[in-house]
Length: 322
Image (cartoon, rainbow, N blue to C red; front, side, top):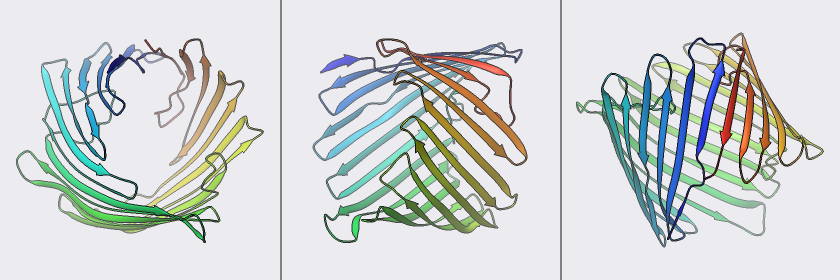
């Protein structure tokens, strides 16, 4: 049993925007044996107009093949808005099989400005299970599969969303991966379904691979199609690059191209840039990383990674283990 603080962060952004914004993320964790822990986190965002902070507790425990855990998250926002999120899960896993069940309850006023909260004012539940195996000889190297079902209800007991589906992945000895997936569901008054496939070449090499993902179906009462080719390559063990494209055909057609380049100057220093074209707009940013000492990492980011268009701003980020 032990106490550790592996990943606290302090982030402060300074930009041309007339609103000065401060972000604070502090994380600590209480370890219980080798496979159980109780992480605690505090998140705060503040600017001249508003503030929001959240306290997050996410315990997880494991005994052999069985695991159980959950989360309690409490948020406060300027103006007296308080909310909470409750989540619980249990699962079982061995070498070849896994299964889990989960549920959550999110109050209407729950929000964390520095996190993506896809739903509030809902209760959810779901189950999933899967099987995987591998072979030491022959053309097939590994096979994985899974099925799932989930449902999201609003707190007034009206159905918001429900889904059921499955997938299968075959990894060939030639280092190609082929995936097939199928899902069917409901989103409010719409009945959706999609079927997808993907091929990945040189799958065992994270730095040099290529592939394509394709899906087709119906979403929001309209035909849906998606195509995404990509390629990644590494030069001289220092310069890595990746190029990907996404083509969406739906009610509104969309196109995105992303070029990413990373250069490792030394193991402690590096440069990275990303150039994005999305629906006629361009965005780019550059990041410099410097490992200072004793696990402290400093980042200088020129530009805004989350903007639709290029922005003139600078962001300083420090990661400091305590």
